[in-house]
Length: 353
Image (cartoon, rainbow, N blue to C red; front, side):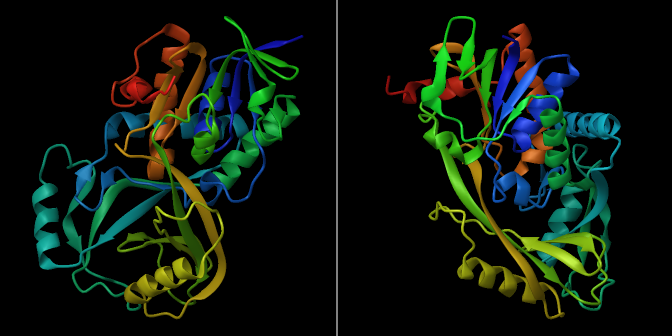
């Protein structure tokens, strides 16, 4: 019987990035994931930017994250001979003169100069409502999540390293140096299950909060916007007058069903931004894996060092996952300590047993 180095449970953005990075390093990886169209990774817009745009501040460890993301994209595109990445100009709409002044002040900070264009952009689009113009965020872009995940799944299936089924925790056996799942054996198992971590008996003590998000795909005929625009909503151009509009945040609903309320909310905010009547093509809903302290969840189970978690990437899974995947691999392969801000040891006192 072949013994893999790793079993990875879940093939959203976290599981895909981790499994790909492990295979690049010559590791034998088996992935288990139940195909669903409504996972947060598959419906996410796939955009990234280096800033927290509410406060005009840089993201956590943004330089390291961007470097790891670019390396991951380059490696993936080379491995699969396909293009998954498109740089985008991101325009943050100003709501007031006060926001313009704050932008000007922040854009002169040394840490933010690489990410913020200090010059304001006057609104060039007659059908966009932006009286105070825009500020441009540099080093932003888009990744085709659907293509990324599907291409990698096809490769795993071709190599006989993929199982399309719901993971059954009762079928898992744990030994000191081996983990068995049915007929599959590995040295370690890594759970990358997104919001389904709440049902995982090994890690359900962690404070992961499933947060519902919905977005819509619309046609805005004649709008001709090519920039990624951020206001109360995000407007992502897909080409041919088609745009993604999102996303909502709902901390109460825990289902993955599209709601009329969310659709109305998005259309109302879109109406504030554009003067073109939208035609709704599709609506999408999913649950984001968020954490109360806004930091990811990485590390080994307190009682089993070969049972690992990689989760809690929230709304920035694309940007943060390549960097954290490399940190996790160093932890698993070389015993390098994880950053305390993402290490699940910070929640060890919450275990009931």
